[in-house]
Amino acid sequence: MKLKFSIHYHTTWGQSLHVCLTTTDAAGRVREQNLLMQTADGERWTLETAIMESRQSPLAALSYFYQVEDSEGQLVVREWNLIPRLYAAEGSQDYLFPDTWRDIPLSYHLYSDAYLVTTGRPRYEAVQPFRLPLFRKTVVFRVSAPQLGEGESLGLLGNHPALGNWNPAQYLAMTPVGAGEWVLSLNAYGLFFPMEYKYVVVDSATRQLKTWEGGDNRTTSEVSLADGQVWVKYDDALHLADDVWKVAGVIVPKLSKKLIDWCAATGMRMIKVQPVKAGRLQRKSLLQWKEWCDYAREKRVALMAPIRIDLNETLGNTRRWRHRLAFIARYCDAVSVDFHTPQGDESHDDYWEYIAGQRLRTMMNETRLLIAADNIDMSMGFMAGVMRRLHILSLEVETVSKVAGHEFARTEDNPYLSVDTLTTRGMPLLDTWWRENPGRTQRYFVTVLHREGKAPRHLTIRVAEEIIARHLHSPSLLCLLRHDDLSLVTDERLRMMLERGGRIV
Image 1 (tube, one colour):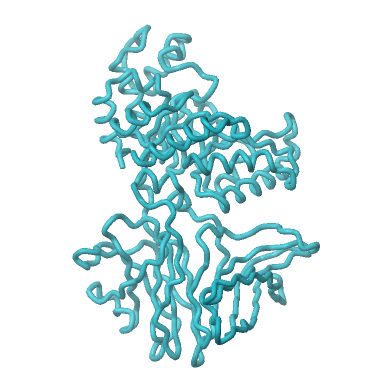
Image 2 (cartoon, helix red, strand yellow):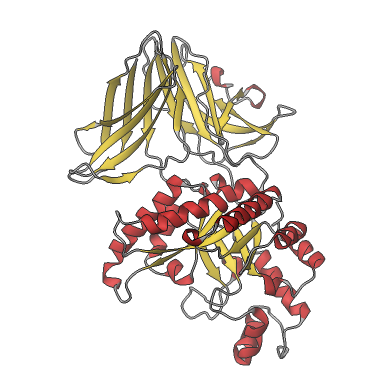
């Protein structure tokens, strides 16, 4: 069996691109290889390699990912590999992989445990090496579609009779292989390249086409296949609007079973809580955390915990925060990150941004945690760039505007990939905030709530409901409010506000 990899990726001087290949035979034996790719211009990289197998234990599956190394063989960056490139392999075939580098996907949040828990989906579904039908010449299409809902499946249509000729009634049904991945193999005889095609969402019960993916038509490159070759086209994620998942949650200092029941009853789907330090937990406390975690997941309530990461630690000395991260990943479904850098060291912002990016990439490759910013400064400072690139949820606080000259933020302008909240840590509760500065309260009353006249001296239930409703209706993916603030309204009123805000999933 021969494998041919090709990819466009720009490297700097002294860097090299590698294929990290893992093969598994029928007896379950695993072999790992780090293979150096070749390039003439530092842009287009290729690799051809042969896999030897025995008759007694033929090859069963292969998986791989790409990574960049420096001149000393040290890892520089690794592509996103939470969902592996895993395929069943047939020893009589040769495989061609025309790839693109896999960055953190824009829909990363749909792969998180928080999404799976709150929507009632299985958390530990793995990609399976599904054996597709193979032909003398074969084309394989593969795409990731985490946006699909219950009762939906995926199909493919294109500009060739073998692809349905754009006829909605003649789509080609694809096969799920786990973790939101779908595949399809075609007999390449008679196909002409390049081809245009799109993925379509299908009603699994009626088998009727429901919707086409958005954007321009997808295209293949020029392909020339010999007998016994399999050309594998791994596309980027399905082009569908993914802003349909919106969750409301509560911030509390302490977790309890009663609180989980209250969240489930009112439609709240997330609890942010400060857990005991992992290193100091006694066996009884660990068992209690496991019980709470399992119970919350049964109720479709996700747990979020904060983590503090000191960027002064060297890349090799990350044992403390990684131990903490492992604890959170085991007992929680989301994490809020607070990065700390030396005070007054703005001149090295590029360096701190690089280090923070390395930490975040590690978290996103090793866990399924939903990741959010934990303080407003991180969203506004040097972290803004790396958060945008990695699609980390920013923190949007109504009382701290990010727009110069504005006293209050406009919740209706929040980006979808954000966490909306009334106040952040260290700030007073809503009713206290309302009383402590009458001048600011009056400005909020007029400019934000668009009310006339004088603001009431003490926060009324009607005004509190209006403020909370504004946040629950914000475009933000997450809306997290303190429990004491939410208790200003009754459970039934809160549930109605959640339903109107589209936050009950």
